[in-house]
Image 1 (cartoon, rainbow, N blue to C red):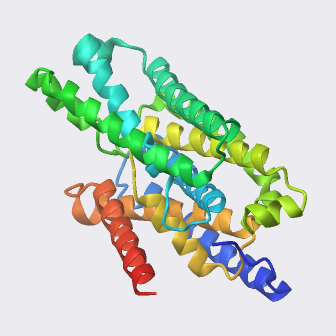
Image 2: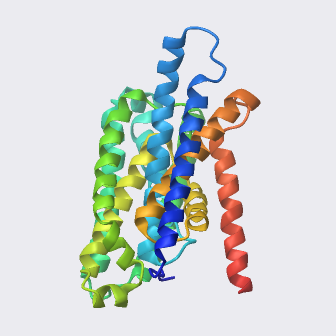
Length: 327
């Protein structure tokens, strides 16, 4: 749905206050994550937790920004980047690697090389798909979404065939890679991921005014002088880079972006991306860091954080589908 950009100045002020409140909550969650339950060896514990905190911050920001951008260009608040088949492609890459060189051989590959390879393949897939659809005879975003769904089904089917031919012992190792994990992030990958996400975030922030116009819809954006094709391609490539980086870092996460993006829309009384983008990122940080703190201290790691956030995101997805059907 095209955005209404006629918000009053009061909406901007109240949105700024909400952002400030979210920032305070996020800082409190980060402080609690770093300090709660520390009984001795502060230097060691803080260093260990700082690595986990960095991973949570990077993944939260990447997923939140990618989802808001994708929903802006698609004009639909139910869709997420996972519909383009990124998760299925990630599983296919992992399955193909284990099928070709085995789980033991995969473990011998340099983690940074593997990370960059996965991110590059997923981004290249998106670039080829977008270029083919936006430079062909038919330039339709709906066709792009349909192609993403169909290719996702194709990737899953190929993955299932390969998985049936893999040794059962290696399949057990492979299966662990199919689910998002915020506790087993390789520290050597954080620097690379931070650079990619930071560069993407800077590019997005510089485009925030253009994104506001893009949210009005294709016809309005073209009428207001926005180069729609080039801008949409740029935004989708940024989405691909952010999604592929977060997926390669912790694994596939389907509904978390949907959850935080719609919470940001509900809290911020404005459609300006200067407010909704940081709000979604802060909400993602609060959910991940706060949730991980509660799991560590209350549930003692008996429950995976990814399961909880995906469960809540799935509920939000079903609620939005039902509400749309009723309307």
